[in-house]
Length: 201
Image 1 (tube, rainbow, N blue to C red):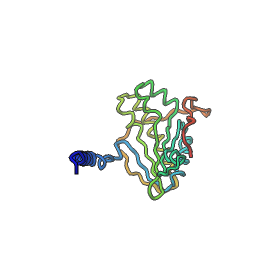
Image 2 (cartoon, rainbow, N blue to C red):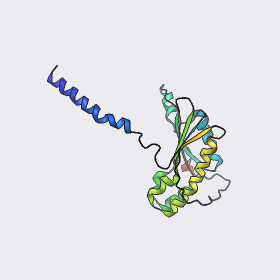
Image 3 (cartoon, rainbow, N blue to C red):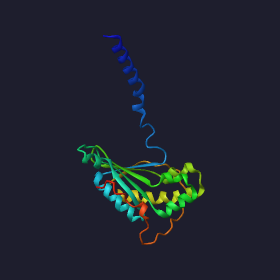
Image 4 (spheres, one colour):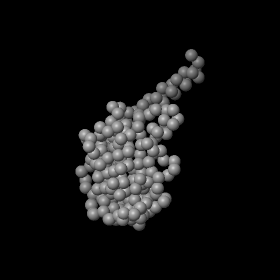
């Protein structure tokens, strides 16, 4: 064996040893603080579609939705169902930006849906109070508390009529106020509508 090949093998071996612990620790601490994870018996496609109805039922806007698994299927690649919803509403957007312009990067808030190996599904989202807490705004905390209530109702309705188990839920309660009434007319601005590139099921 040449000295160059020996050196290459040594470098490769050291590289594997260096990165090996990272792979095992990548998901340590998951679910993270403030993250809600709900397993249910619905199929991925059923939950994906039921979430759309639940969002609209609670007068929130579907800013966009995308599915990595749908995109992969169009390229002839099969992966477990995987999709994300962007959810928000313009009156919350206005309040958020009045309280903190930097917080605008958090909008829209997301709900993530995945397919499990047994063909059931999982719904995951971060509580809005956890999302907006780092910005240190009292007004933002009040708004996030209202959104906590709405997102909990959306999640409950999306998995309704199916046995479900909540894997992680923090016990710290955010301040809550009565959400403002929303007029029956369309409440989304054009800029918050579903983009043409969003994948749907």
